[in-house]
Image (tube, rainbow, N blue to C red; front, side, top):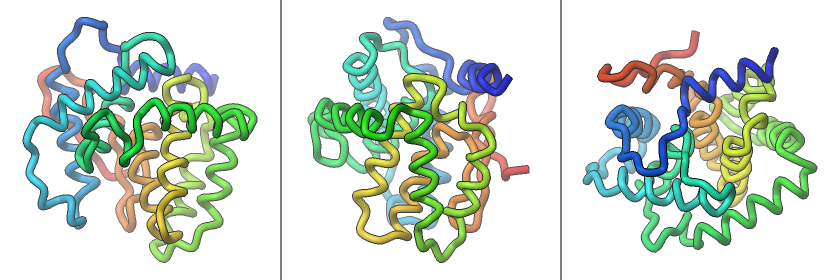
Length: 219
């Protein structure tokens, strides 16, 4: 039953796009809404949207998917992740300064080292729960996300994204920054997360064609 719920969530949030499709307008709107909300009260919020990051994120997500899975039918979570990365900078198909293929291989190795995607998510949550986070968000997120282990692990694409999230978070200099980075990327897979004192729900951000993106407080 949990696996079925995870599959239905992926269908709802991350319907795969045909190879020849253009970026769905709902996805572009969702990316700006979600990432804008995550950037609120950060220096990145002052950076204007040029539109280039929406295309760069699309192209990098498809390249990532092609390398990892042999196709370019990405899900929304992948698109949001790579637009977020391209807001920081992804020139030359890089992820925080490293070529995406190199990072993809690190992700593959990390999953293998942890014994698969389910074990990786469990270990990542244990690591997160042990961080000193003055906001308390890290421990709240562990409790929230541990309710359904299928969400980050049942699908190949989300398993890779979760490993990437942990990889990026572990590179931050302080426990607080590590917890914050993990939350800001994990929410794109989990759809709910505590970001500092705010609990955000993005599960309905792109579910209705032609409608404005919906970001809600967690219920």
